[in-house]
Amino acid sequence: MAQYMGVSSSEVHRVFKLACNMRFQSPTAEEIRFTTGTALDLAVVAAILEGALRLVPVDKSPQGQSQRKEVEKRKAGEAASAEKSFVQLLRTIGLDLEDETQQRERIQQRLADGQASTIRITPDVLFRSPTMVCGKVVSWIEYKNSFGFRKNPFVHKSHLKQTRRYQASFGDGLLVYKLGFETNHINEAGIHCLHEADVVSWAQSYISHL
Image 1 (cartoon, rainbow, N blue to C red):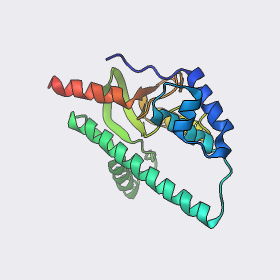
Image 2: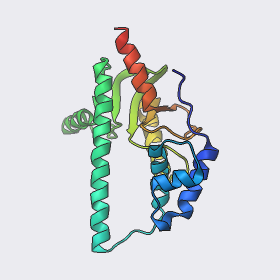
Image 3: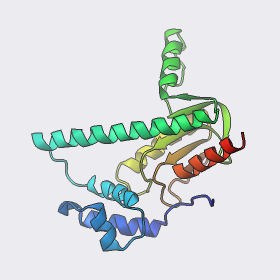
């Protein structure tokens, strides 16, 4: 299977522009996809629309706050479940790693032992030694249950800042997106982007050769 290279920037921008123009009309992903005529997967269109809706002023009414908390809770649960499944896949093929919980426990123990200089940031996956994943030798993986694109309000800058810190602390790593990403999404030395589907395919191939 050919490696995923990303969605063209022109297509992402076209969908995002319409989503921004319609953001006050409570559009659905189906409406955005129909109006643009894009061939993008509906889940990707929904992720781009979500970015556009982030530009709508926050509803600070009690009802608005309650609805926002419910949505955030649901999305956090979905993200945690997807991340757990992804990490479990890596464990299944025998990769020597620490998940976030294990990293936090180790950090707390070292701090308790007086090791104040301990690195305190925790990627979703930290390998105990540099490890080959999909042809890349990496020390960490950050998993995102979303679609990566540069114009994503607030989110893109956050992902970039986060992964830069990991690269500076641990070396080269992977940023894995469940839904894929825009071409040239992140151009940073030592930070590689992959579609989750490519990692799953690689892991399945790895298992078949055991």
